[in-house]
Amino acid sequence: MKNTIVSISLALVSSQILTSCASSVVQTKASQAAISPAEALGELKAGNARFVAGQGRKRNALAQSKKTAAGQYPIAAILGCIDSRGSNEIIFDQGIGDIFSARVAGNILNDDLLGSLEFATAKAGAKVIFVVGHTRCGAVSGACQHFKLGHVTGLLEKIQPAVRKVSLSGHAGTHGPEFEDLVSAENVKQVVAQIRAQSSIIRDLERQGKLVIAGGLYHLNTGKVEFFH
Image 1 (spheres, rainbow, N blue to C red):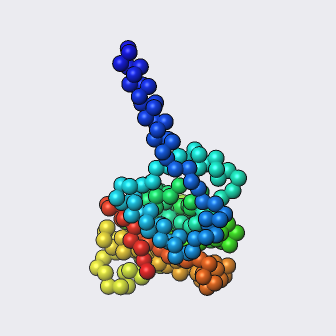
Image 2 (tube, rainbow, N blue to C red):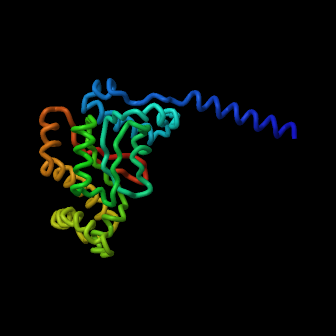
Image 3 (spheres, helix red, strand yellow):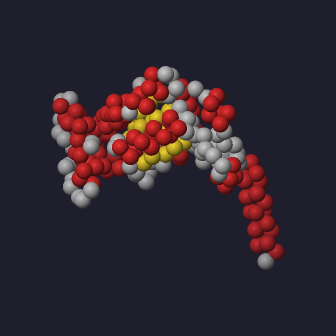
């Protein structure tokens, strides 16, 4: 019994030490204003590098939650897929209050998502819009195979332009992992172009140098995000 009590006590002490060492630093109005769009994009790249290396920052999530209760100043807005394996906060090693995270199957764009990105940038001050797709995407696979199911049918139609583009590029076949990953990458590029074309608000912010719009592909087998230039 005595050994059990000692073990429990040591575990509690260790937990308290780890919690005290975890960072409670959050983005502030000043830190958001000070970072440039290029630096904000650089932080996403650095965050993914930390994730791949298994060196993610230790954070006190509860403390960060309390500190951001009165306001938020994220540096980026990330549009990603709903896939359970691609949490934006995790793969880019970001904490509470660091990023806006919008997720929908196939990381497609619609009016509601575009409005969300306009709010995140023009109103809330994010310096980057980053569209991230991923390998082995179920939505992309469904689009390639012309899968139909209720409201999913309309969603997958939004990926068809990317399917057609890759099909016309001379790639053999219209399905299979390699083909579908090419479609995922093309879909990201098309969504980036759609954001610019459909939102004058976002387009003007980019032209003024207040915002960077970029995209990339998350590789499930390595954890690495391939950043498109």
